[in-house]
Amino acid sequence: MAQEVRGVIAPGKDEPVRIETIVVPDPGPGEAVVKIQACGVCHTDLHYKQGGINDEFPFLLGHEAAGVVESVGAGVTDVAPGDFVILNWRAVCGTCRACLRGRPWYCFDTHN
Image 1 (cartoon, one colour):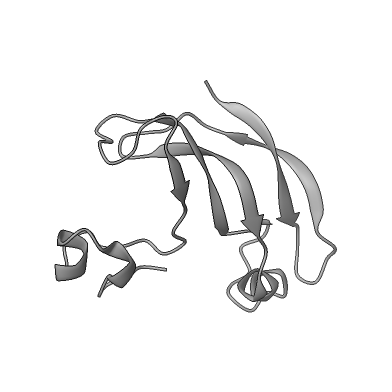
Image 2: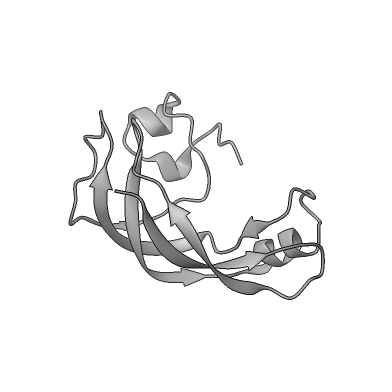
């Protein structure tokens, strides 16, 4: 079931951030919902807030996070509810040598 959580939102270029309630949908195929226990907001987030990445506001800030898997979508086999995880902000390819060896943090073809 979709749930409401609080998030740090950058509403527009150089505008003050706000804490807002956002809706997290149920996980789709290949997805997992993670209850975040710790999250950092770093210099990359500052670039987003200042419009240095792109101007598709609003942005949900914070991409360095860790937490516990709450639910998984169809086809997810690598994690299960209750697992502790660290989120990777980079989308890995899943097909390079590093990914196929179970070391996606060394992915040769990440998609940011």
